[in-house]
Length: 308
Ligand SMILES: [Zn+2]
Image (cartoon, rainbow, N blue to C red; front, side, top):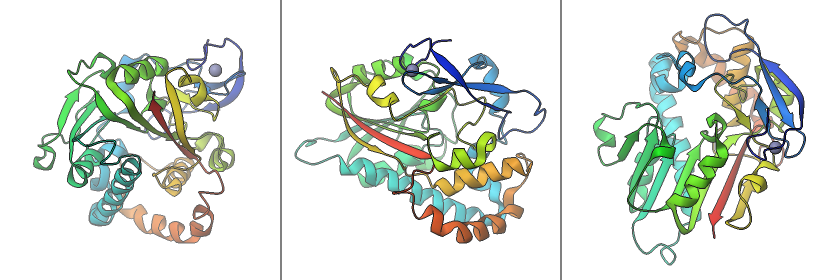
């Protein structure tokens, strides 16, 4: 098995995990290997992409969003809005009227329920595009201004180039990250940006939670990127890495709490209303630890890369 980031055939065993965030048979084991060269950790036995549907049932928590939380849905919705606004702010930091005198063209890859694009459109003079292999609430009136496409995004044939491509927790699902980077190069204007956020296995949470860490998200996550992966994927001949943060926009507490839920065998198709107070209590108790996320690498990373 070769590394899909650097093509090295040299690797060693890293960890075994069971299927995560899904109900039913938990006996199947998946093995992750670590590339000896670029330190990317990858699934040795990934499922055929056509078999992945079983791991994205209708009850899959990210699909249900705030609706999974019953009477607390409004609070969860507010948290989700805050997350998406944080993402808009991060992207906006790299935009300026001088460099971008016209409308910003932005493509969000793996846009899911397209709330990030919705908030971007509300705050930035932009044309917003999203692509995902499956629609999620795309018919809702609030998303009517967005240009959304269903299908394999590497087959996407747009007639124009983008200023920004974002991928929030998408690239770890990607079977062919090198092809994705090539596609970004093709789709971006010169000076255009790629902003990627993914889980980080080299953080404290993966060490503490081991095979329950939700960053594995087995068998949906194919590659867990190392600090070295980025300079390998984004070669200096075409790209400049502007920023690499060992934290992200997603609250690492949520990732930790979902891992804890896995360990405690929560039923994933249940109504999560009954878990809300436990979540709120633990959020308060663990606040001092998670407040350190910018100095103590926990479990999320973000990279900002510019096309030359
Ligand atoms: Zn490698």
